[in-house]
Amino acid sequence: MKKILGLVISVLASTLIAISFHNAFLLNDYRASSSNEKIQIIIESGDTGFDIAKKLTESGVIKASKVFYKIALNDSRAKSIAPGVHEIDTRISSISALEQLLDAKRIIGIFGFSEGLRKVEILELLSKSDSVIGKPSGTIFPSKSYGTKELEGFLFPAQYSFEPGTTADQAISKMIERFNFAAKKSKLDQGITGYSPYQLLIIASMVQSEGDPEDFAKVSRVIFNRLEIGMPLQINATIDYALNLRGNIRLPYKRLEINSKFNTYKYRGLPPTPISNPGEEAMAATVNPVAGNWLYYVTVKPGDTRFTRSYEEFIGWANEFRKNEKAGLFE
Image 1: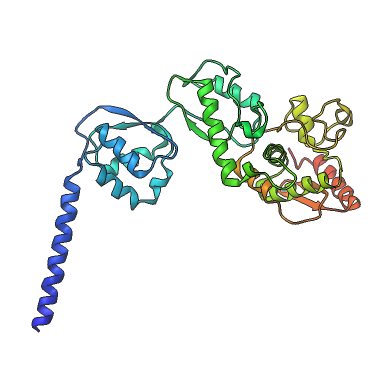
Image 2: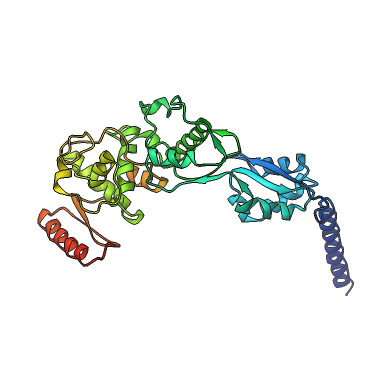
């Protein structure tokens, strides 16, 4: 009985110590905002939980960095804190600080664009941003390892937060920096046997423009298969790019005769530059295409893209596509 009583007392004591420690921990934190002041906190890409906690403390947002750090460690949402300029209340609890950092409405100068846009389209969007000033100087280039000064393909599609007064060159540099991260993650920057990193980027841009994400790895394989046997790529998106057009499911035959190095019906091999700015999925699919002997693909109807090595089968599917197009399935 004494042993049981002793055990109960020990458990109670441990619980009281834990509660006391927890209360002491929380006392080292603001309970509610006692100020109407707001402040801008810049979260850099790569900032750790400790880095963020330190910035919040030094800026007078929270009382103690350790409290925020512990809360962030135990809340998986903290990994979703976006880089950028965040407008946050001062003298608030660490939990409130985390909630405000996760609130997209508090991010200043949000700028973003989707996968597959072209350089000219992205720069047009950039020129309309309220946070970005000036025009590109033409002196910002990709890493020398790619052997080009062409920006097409290197403006990575993502959400950015530009501090008011950010120059166009600074914004472009951020996009290239984000591209470098994605290229390293997908290993596109390493190249593969027979293909340089820049050649892989060109392929990734076509994969992005031609397929849906679930078909990227197959489209990639078709491109490699054609290149390996010297077969023209015959990719419609390259002609659209040359003519600065969008959304052509089927090209008029006269356009297939345009005299441009981007005409992959007329010229064998890769086009001279990327034709879009691909996302990470298209990059990864280019570096790791699925196994297959396909040489042709056709989207018979929305959501139904088919792959084959047989030209006869391809023609049959192409006829099926034309019927579906006339029936209005692609409208």
